[in-house]
Amino acid sequence: MDTRKDQIIQASLKRFSHFGFNKTTMSEIALDLNITKANLYYYYADKNALIKDVLMFIHEQITERQSEIIESYDGNLMDILDRLLELRADFLREYYILHINENLEWIKGDGVGTIIRRVHIADVNSTIDLFKRAVDHGEIILDEIEALANCFVEIVIGLSLIRSIGDMLSGIPNSVNVDSILASQKLATRFIFSNKLISKNS
Image (tube, rainbow, N blue to C red):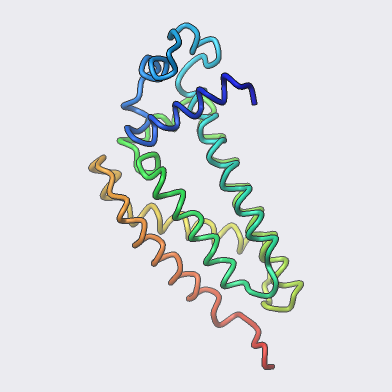
């Protein structure tokens, strides 16, 4: 990544994480970087373009860590799922205000919705990879792995949204809710998979 762009993304992420997308201006980001607003617009034509790169930066960080966790699979599906949920919770705590935002108007911006969809597809593909490993290892029997992976990701995301809807409506972040989100996600995961795991004693 271009060094200046990397600096812009880091500065933007710091502001976005503290104030949210809507309450952060391009002028403030330029001031943080000690550059002119014109110079900032040279790299990013508008804030939506910058938001897209920030979202992709976060996603790439998560994806790299997810891959490492999935690569460590060795017949321990529930442990891996817990570690993946805990990883997501760590990022959610750090970027909670981006999760709730003051409102979701920025999603309507050009290309941002496409980025969110791309992130979802990548999450599903990672889950497919994990489920296939568990099936190949003989730990679990699953039909229609792709559909089940998509459903599982939607459940995990849905629980996160439901548990934080009050913060979304109020616009007041309360990252303590992340513990509640994680607990619900782990409980749902056990409800879904515990009776599907093949006994090691059979």
